[in-house]
Image 1 (cartoon, rainbow, N blue to C red):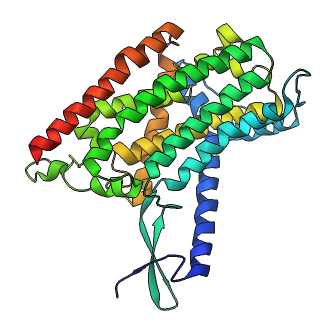
Image 2: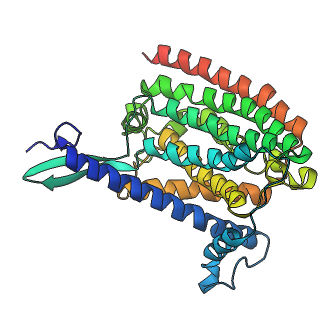
Length: 354
């Protein structure tokens, strides 16, 4: 019997239940990873710096993220008298929400077969498969930075204002570079759907059977420059070290979040780690074949995302923060010209191949 794709038209109740389960599971896994990413980061950086990291709270410090969350929840929530109160409270949520919403279009694995009422349904391991999925993610990424800018403007503090201005300039520079870097992926896959991009990467590289089997048709092999530009541009866009100039504590106290405390302060950090997971998931989908690999589909996906998170932590522990002029020069004079050149070379290569 040929399986039926589960949809609202053929089984509305089952479709709604499946959607609810997928949303709960995706949100719970993301929040769990975000909570324990702080523990992993402190452990990994501690090992790189010949320290132990968290050890006192729970076995090997495993309860430290929970203790930190309780501490921040019960801290006094201070709002400056001269701050724009509504915008001040809205800004942390504007940063966190886009990172969570972006995960809705990420495919985590191949279709799941469910037999119900004598009919076998195919359930995609993806909350929703938009045919413009990658454009949706770029739009969400742009919205996230508005939260930082809003926090800087609403705080009525010079440190926060400078941090917000830095974030807006950084967003324009690096969002453009990261967006241009993935144009080549659209050209190769001929689709904007993320599940379609994963499907286009299955099989041996370029369909050449003489190549070794480990050389999958993943776009990291055919687009290494675009991969590098996307990862660097995305790290800069989420203000991850060494691009954390909007919150550079040695220059701006804590930049855009100087005036924040309690859970609002915690939301900024939850957003940073949620963005790490989201960027890792997008890079896995666009360049590393998504769930494709030797293990069960979603396990391959998680391994690749965790690999990216380790890379981000390693970069934080290794590279010094850039100066602001270096940041701007790198974005406008190096990354954007390289991304444009990569598009031209890819277009010529596609024409010659055809």
